Amino acid sequence: MGPIDLTRYALGQGGLSDQPMFDSEVDQVRQLHPQLIRLFVQEYFNLYPEHGKYHWTTLDKSIETILAAGAKPLMCLCFKPKVLFPKIDDTIFRPNSYPEWEQLIEHLVRHCNVEKKYGIKYWEVGNEVDIGESGGSPYKFTPDEYTQFYSHTADAILRADPQAKVGGPALANYHSPIGTALIKYCGAGKAPLSFFSWHIYNSHPDVYVKSIRMFKKELAEYPRLDHVETVIDEWNMSLSNPNLNPYFQPAFVLQTTDDFLKEGLSRSAYYHIRDYHVDPKLFVAFMSPKGTMFMAHWWNTMPQYDGLFDQQGRIRPAYFAFKLLGLMHGERLQVTGTKPGIGALASRDGPWINFIFWSFPQESEPVTTRVTVDLVPVPKGRVRLVRLNPTVPVNNLEQISNDPVGPKSSHLLSVDLHPYNIYWVEVDVEQ
Image 1: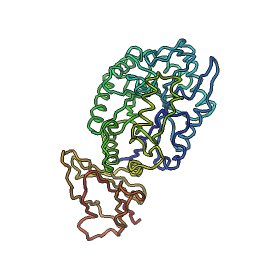
Image 2: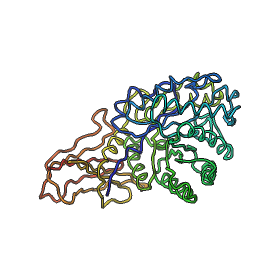
Image 3: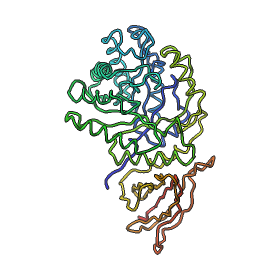
Image 4: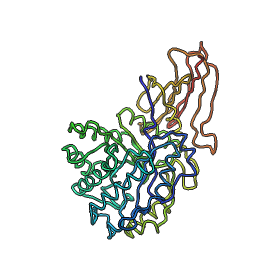
């Protein structure tokens, strides 16, 4: 069916600290082969401490952690230097000098791509611009305010790097009128738009599908936006009411990513790599007391289920779902016989055929299904069957069997697929 590579459906890291937040997990993240890792460019990096003075060292460490993981950053610009925004108020969007703000953005882009040669392509203007501090960002806009701020910032980015990709608005609520306003504004040629971004935290994959179709339809109304990429650069199951069945989150990752592929979503960033505590002293310098208290309570008090690694660096089963998705490269193979509630992906790369299938029930009362697997034509070689077992402390990818392909067998293999179970089949084909 042509080439397949799911590493464009990648990862992000929350805006929680001025320190590299997953430096101890770099090697594990590198094994997932993410193309992009979204990075919050937040005020705690102190990029512009005084008029005409720049500080890059702390930010560079976080960028270089992403590069060490084999990815490129998607830079989410959500910082407000005190010299340009002296009053702490997330509804104040206009710097006291737009020329100075634009000069700062130009210097940032040139530092990254000319001085340091990081090769960063994606620059996002704002984070959850429709909700402000409750989304961890010091900006809260009306539609007209955002398009004005976006235009100034995008122009500065492109002056520094004409090849950069500029986008936004990283909506918290994809129904926010800010999204439609930006599409209309850029569709009329008033500002450039390379990618359109939004966020969803919902345990029902059909919500993601609806959002993708909605924005693709809106973008299609403007011929000058036919090149615009669609990006869900924060997503996860519902975190306010999480499903704590240990089998759920890995199956949710596979099902949602499969829907991204089917719907033609350009890119995504799962939120996030590692859960992390926040230091309120970092946030009180640019957030209100209420906003700082919210951040500290959410990240330091509330139980967390976001990261591929928890706050103590322990691996979560969702990591292995991304590990299996990373096997889907080479030539995509056609899969027939699936039905609602059972998904599958298959590929061939050299002598290996990789096939993953999973249960993501749509019924209110999930059932167990007998699944048989066949390959046409029947290959010669060995077939390995592995189950993702999220309930064990080690060996989460649990080998069930490793046998020669039986040329006279009625099926390659047959298993009972329980709700939210995931299986990986690897066929080592004799050459």
